[in-house]
Image 1 (tube, helix red, strand yellow):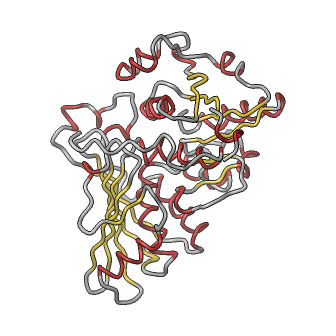
Image 2 (image 1 turned 135 degrees about the vertical axis):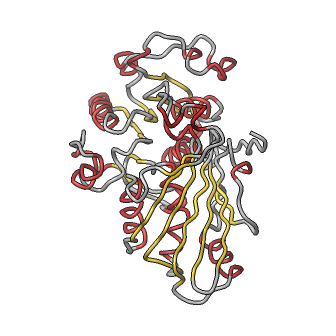
Length: 356
């Protein structure tokens, strides 16, 4: 690796006070080849970062959130990374301004967006799901969207990371479809921790309602379903009929996803497991396990685990991941590592917590 690819790259985090932004901040601070240049939060500009993320006190010290004008001061000749945790619907216009500014200043800017704004191939597809105009349709062609394990390389300048539920579904669905093992009807049921609902308290994340409780929401109507179907079609040539029922679980972090489908040919569990292991050979963050995967075995890490079972004619694939890491900030930094020429595991080697 050349000296140009080993030098620390200044990195800016947008949307700086939410849970995903907090994970971006935690991972960037521990990354050997990224240097935190600023954390933008217009609503908290000038406020100490530790006020939003007291668990990072030892690392952030007296750093403060920055306004847009302060962030723009980091643009200049050379490389710059930008990780966006801005909300759906707001990220596109915000990023469009930064991308235009980078071109004016001669900045070699690499963006990874954790919002949904650049996950669709067209403005029409985005607007059909989110029910408002896209904030920067002219930039859609500059973003690629896929789980890192499914797209080895791309010539697109920037990356849109799939959502947390989407990542879990894609890890199961893409190999089933691409290997011709099952489908195209896919039935998915996922359970997510309360951090998946964001930092702003709502009725369904209020502790007395969430604790010791389990309930479905937006069944067969969740916005991730068309996103996953479109990405599957792009990667495999098959657009699945995806029937998705999400659930809110009584824990803070993690996702457990079950994807069921009809097998295209008779196949035992051992053969299916080996087919998936072959598909993910060389993927350091995805493991196909012999038993059933458990949320506690991956929480706090960028790892995902996959388990399978079959009966006479159908298959169930179980996937577990941390919604804030592999499903958001960690997967995004995995992409950023690739785009910057770093080792894909750089800054992402922390093992799971185990007893979180």
